[in-house]
Image (cartoon, rainbow over all chains, first blue to last red; front, side, top):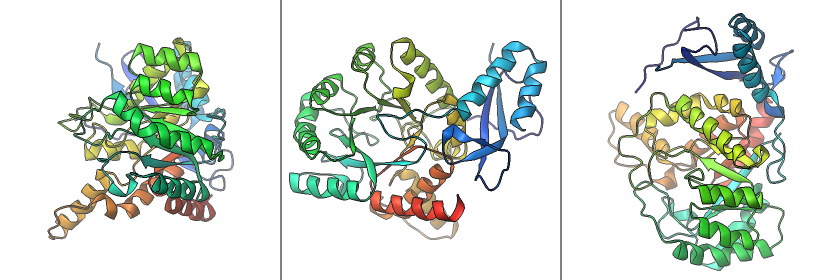
Length: 58
Length: 315
């Protein structure tokens, strides 16, 4: 099983050749964010993202 | 990191990175078109009906037409917009049955449900092309395949008939899926699986608006894999298609409960599916708060009630 390390910094530049980048929105309700984005035209909102990176095996 | 920050950092890395970041953010934000005419801007409940003698949750097993009628109308009245009918059990260790046997089990029940002319949609839970073909003729609205349409002929059929589909992730087969499942990190591995699958389906002529993804809780996953999928559920919105989640009465609820018993020094051998309703509702509420568009459940009334309460409390 992989060890997932939580860090404030990116492992590599996002979407670069050496690492896969995934983004997961940090969700909240409309009242919690004033200038948030609507998730998939639905009922949840987000402003910030959790970025996940995984080294590519080249 | 905010969306603006991500775009800024990606831009520094060149145009390819920037367009990839924009593509991902657009996938998160873009409205989902209706799926099988269902509104994907609100949660939808899918009720489960098993025409099987060996499904893992005995109360969901239907063995006569009166029970089917009662179950179906209750589900519709209580808020199900889709009813998912299956004739083959996919519980861990279940053996494959022939498509003839499967068709014999589901054909009359589906005919009955279609004749009811209710508003709800009928989805067929099957991995057999011949069952799909037979049930398509009698008006099934959605195909739900645990093998994610792993055969060219199945893809050709759904592309030709333009039928909405649910693609589920499963490692191996139901007979051996729970024997040492392996992932580098389940949420991202499954994300990549779906990403490739969606690209291939679109290339084969399937419309993106006809695709829903189901990460397949309990299908070739350990307890920790299942929990990671739930913790990172919003990630799957990056695929740009609606998400379905089915954790109803599944073994992870029993496993978590037993862990707690063990922690408290108490001995408990098993938490049977009949004792897993509260856990099912907790997972359904979590999925709802993660923006999941379709919730698959055995307990339509209870799930709908939990969502209503959650909606008035937090949204």
